[in-house]
Length: 372
Image 1 (cartoon, rainbow, N blue to C red):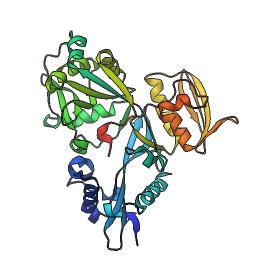
Image 2 (image 1 turned 180 degrees about the vertical axis):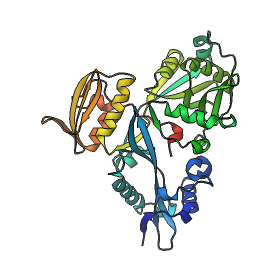
Image 3 (image 1 turned 45 degrees about the vertical axis):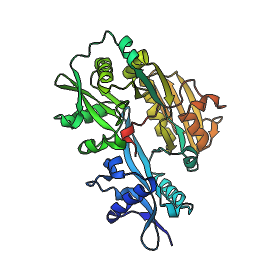
C-alpha cells in the first residue's frame, strides 16, 4: 500500500539518494542550495512511500518569492521529480504532482519548472517566457569594442572577495525583477547547476559579477554596478576565457545589457525560459505588464478576457497599468492552455484573440541559479 505524504527530516538522505539514483547525478554538488550537507530541505518534498517505508517517488516544491516592479508574486519552483526505476509506470508522479498543485492553488501565484514539454503540459504547464542568447566571438570584440579600454579589469572567484555576499545581494535586489536570495546562502546558490561566480574587479574595486559555466564559455548572469562597465567587462572576459565564442544570456528587460550586446554580437536567438503554471492571472499580468511598460514599452490599450475562469480587464495608459478582476460582457473566454499560450509564448500572434499588439509574451525570465 503506497502512502503519499510530506517527507520528514530523517528522510533527508533518502530523498537525495532517490534523486541521485533516478538521474544518475550527484544532487549534493548539482544543487547545494537544496542538498548541501548543512541544508535540510526534506520539508519541501512530497513523497510516495511503500509498505516497507522505502521512497518510491518524490516531487519537491521550493518557495521563491519574486519581486517585479515592487509587486510581490508568490512563486514556487518545482523540481527533483524522481521516480525509482522499479516504480516507473505506477502513477506516483501524477499523484504527487496533482497533490502539490491542489495545495498551491490558494497560496501561490505561479509555479515554475524546467522539464519535457508534453510531460508537464498534462499538469497545466506551458513552455514560454523570454530569454535572449547572444553569441560573441573574437572578431566581434576586436572590431566592435576596439575603442573600449578594458585596462584594470580582472576576474577572481567572487566569494574570495571581502564583502562579496552583501554586494551580490544588493546587485540582485536592485533589479526591476528578482527572486529573493538568502544572503547567507549565496555561495551555495551561486554554485547551483555547476555554475561558478566570478567577481569583476577594476583594479581592486569590486564592480560586478558574472555567473559562468564550468567551461567558461557561457555567461548565465551578467551583473554590473555601472552600465558603463559592461563593454569593458565583455572585452576583458573574452580575453580571460580564451573561448572561441562565448554565449551570454539576458532577460528581455535588461535594456543596457541588450543594447551593448545587440551592437556587437555575431548573432542572437530568442528562447523560452521555463515552463509556467499560472494560478493568479491578474497578479501575473499586473506585475509583468508593468515591467514591460517601464522597460521596453507597450502601446496603450485595453484587453478583457476570462482566463481559466478568472475574469480580467487590463488597461494601459500614460500613467501605467491597471488590472480589474472583472470582464466585459463580450470578453474572450480562454481555457488555461489558451490563456497561458497567449501570455507566455511567441505563438500569441497566431491566436484569434484581439489583444493589443506587443503586449505578449510577457517578459518572464528565470536566472539559471534560481532554478532547481
